[in-house]
Amino acid sequence: MPYKINYKKDQDYIAITVEGNFSQSTLKELAADVAIYIEQHGCNRILNDLRQASLIRDSFSIYNMPKTANRAGVELRCKRALLVNERSKDFQFLETVFLNQGHNVKMFTNIDAAMRWLLNKETHEPGH
Image (cartoon, rainbow, N blue to C red; front, top):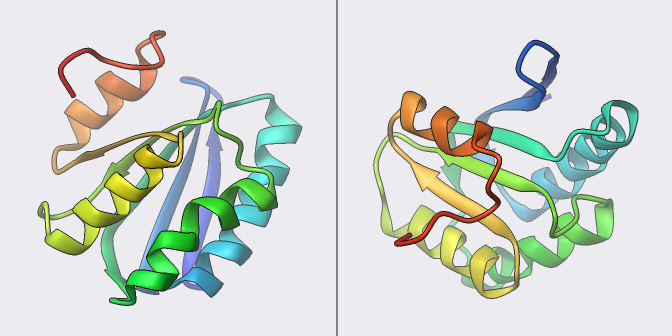
């Protein structure tokens, strides 16, 4: 499996680590598993560690990823920090597509900044 999911009870968030190719089919499987964690723990905060992942460069697939996540049970109300090594055009496009389709996501290259934003009680930060 190219990903790992853990619930961090002490800070009430779901941690996901993705390795290797990150495609729509990976997301479909991952989102279904994450939806189970969301339901089991009543937690809507998710840290997606994509530092070891490579986004499949297929604009059509990327454009459909938000719908795939939503259909699997990762709803718009979920707050998701995307942790990446660098703000590549591919991951920026992914973030933009999710935002444009109403998802609460934000991309970070720093784990501390990602955690501060994720654990903040506000759902959106001004000046994104």
